[in-house]
Amino acid sequence: MTTAIIDQLMGETAPIKSGERCGPLKETLCIEGGHPLHGLVRVSGAKNAGLVLMAASIMADGETILDNLPRIRDVEVMIEILNDIGVDTSWNEDDSLSICPPAGKVKNHTSYDLAKQMRASNLFLGSMLGRQGEAIVSLPGGCDIGSRPMDLHIKGVAALGTEVKIEHGYIFANTKQPSGARVYLDFPSVGATENIMMIAAKTPGTSIIENAAKEPEIVDLANFLNSMGARIRGAGTDLIKIEGVSSLKAGRYAIIPDRIEAGTYMVGAAISGGEIQVENIIPTHLHPIIAKLQETGAHIEENDRGLLVRAGNKISPVDIKTLPYPGFPTDMQSQMMALLSLAPGSSMIVENVFENRFQIVDELKRMGANIKVEGHTAVIEGVKNLYGAQVKATDLRAGAALVLAALTAEGETEIEDAIHIFRGYEDIVEKLTTLGAKVHKGYMEGEYTD
Ligand code: EPZ
Image (cartoon, rainbow, N blue to C red; front, top):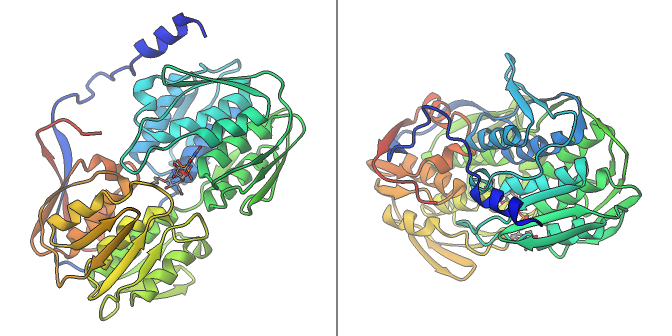
């Protein structure tokens, strides 16, 4: 790798758009507790399907149109990355997004400034290799929920004939002898499964992913790639078979609804003592969340428009172990911790997917929760009520959980670094306000903390 490219990588910074706020103000969310949620909420498209489909769209010749893509901060960052590598994008009148890669190669790396804002930028490893056989992807820095390694991603693309070097915090990948291969994943990693599916879709021969991730977002990616002419079978099971094809053709595709956003609002009804109708969902994607919420005493019934969720007379303590799908989703762990903070008795949460996903505990304790953490296990002793406080969103789902806690807390809560929440929840202020919550955006002095 020539030092020129490395200098360029290290030197590049994302262009600051004129007028972009660079000042010290940062967004907060202010919530007055004591207002149960009532009414209808329509779930947006799934963030974790939309992001990978945006990355995969560069593998197709022609214009891809994505429907049901949520207008959230992570999608905006993904659009900046696509534009940065030479891909045109535009929002259409009907709220779909058009993505038009150039005729030739795209720029084979993204600026560090953009890549470090979002782990999902690592999904360009598979899609760039699938498109043009070369990719330079920033190794993601650590984040608030764990170290986020990429060893399984690298093992997968290497098995399919890609030479991989890691230098200066970047993965330099070049496909030398592309050929299908069998890859066993030591852990059913969502991102690694997605990257291997994308490169394999355009790699000559047959590839097999064993111990593949089974999340609904994996199935959505397979359906999207197959709609472009890929030949992927078995997505949603732990064995995925891919026959490589020479080219993929762009088309139009509607993204699945966001099961984690749906689950978050369902907990909102349960924790605030309310009753809401949740629309635009796929019930099977929600089974682990429905089952656990019913165990806590919430009443949930499926109807032809979605789910009717009503708070129980009391919140019962339960034990939760997070697991890869179809186990209980780690992305709902913080939200359930907020709910169980009010369940009389002892609840236990074991976090089996990420090594550091209890950052929310200290913030909930500032609101009066009684929680003890030992390694991967948190023991929650339910308290009678929570109190409003100044708290900080440390990551997307912890931020969402603080919103839920604030809905029921006595008094006002101000959530700092609310930008984390806006990364994954479309129109959250509008949706909560429509449901009767008293919530508004605020600003406070100070730099964003990563
Ligand atoms: C995806 O992250 C989601 N993000 C995460 O959602 C979600 O929590 C996670 O899957 C698990 O469901 C997107 O889809 C953009 P993993 P990903 O690879 O792909 C270890 C949210 O809040 N691992 O399945 O990064 C890793 O350290 C976000 O929406 C390796 O050891 O998750 C972790 O412990 C947060 N080596 C575990 O696997 C690897 O090469 C799960 O990670 C890759 C992963």
